Image 1 (cartoon, one colour):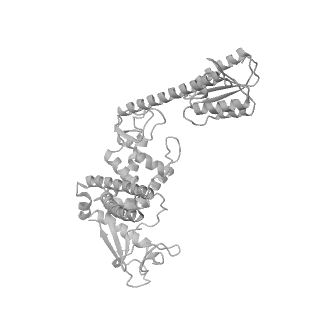
Image 2 (cartoon, one colour):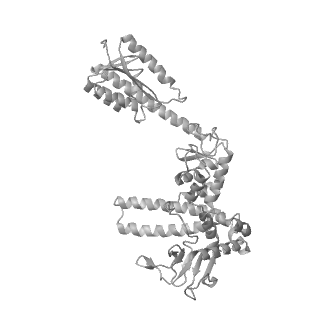
Image 3 (cartoon, rainbow, N blue to C red):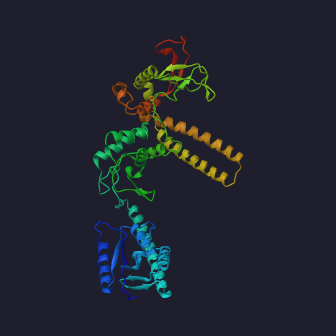
Length: 468
């Protein structure tokens, strides 16, 4: 192994470079260069993977490039500070040995000794070193996991990685402007505003994530349902206990946000809404829900008749005048003592909503279990269908009740202040207007027109049923 080598590769790697200064890599390279000079070997290239673990199994670009050069005969030896810089997994060692054997490369030099891969003892030594390195990495990983759990159990933050939106770099002190954004969005989400509406608002106001990116609906949902924001310490996706930092929103708000935004029944592919009263209008002839039925550029609601519709086709009404009429009635209703009583009475609603939320989650899990049982052949299609129908019926009933109990959030600040809301109404986006209307209104029956073709809105056709 004392033969001169003219195309040697030096490989250096450090798995964690906390400062970004590559000091560990630089020290390895200096020592390896000195070893090459001592032997009189010519170094053709230095291959460096900085801040890359050899145990994680992730691709190491420089290492892969060195393997290719070895396989194609462009390198005739390897110098590395220690064998664990090359491999920490036995499976990678075997690939390296196979590549070197095929290419006729025998000389692998470490600063603690030479390894001749062509000899049985040399290969055994390499395998032993790789196994020891793998065990060391695994032990280090287990110690790190245990330490992380201990830190989590104290309620203190994990200091690695970027800060969370709403907190400063110490991970505990609130960032005032961002914390206010979180409180605002939490209230708006509980009031019925959609995720896409909130994400659009964040983009329009040039409010960026911690990483400087634009918000998306999934990132808005993720941070609004993160227990960190109501003062809980999370470890590996599980709540460990109270955190040491002050919450930004209340625990009650946080729990309700999770039930609302993580409900599997919540649709995430809604197209943009153009109609304020979608789902709230009922045909006065046949009882079918009215749908949007535009005529050219004119927005209308109608009872559709046809192969894919169950309506009678006998009731149509212009949207704009109806929406203005209902909005005015809702604002008036907010100032009535009946609505005040309906929306503020009943202190057990919070506990009932929590119970319903748990029941909805339990039935959702049962639906998943049921699907698995059918897929595994444990139940027949008939049994699956029968059980599914019962669970689905209960789910829909509980979801309707849950929605009724939580509608009050949309109008809590406006009860008795309908006039104030009237001044703000045109400035609210459509999703917030819809939430307010649904909190006050159960549905509206639209009767057939007494005079077909009449222009304007006939109030006698509009029969609202208010929430009690």
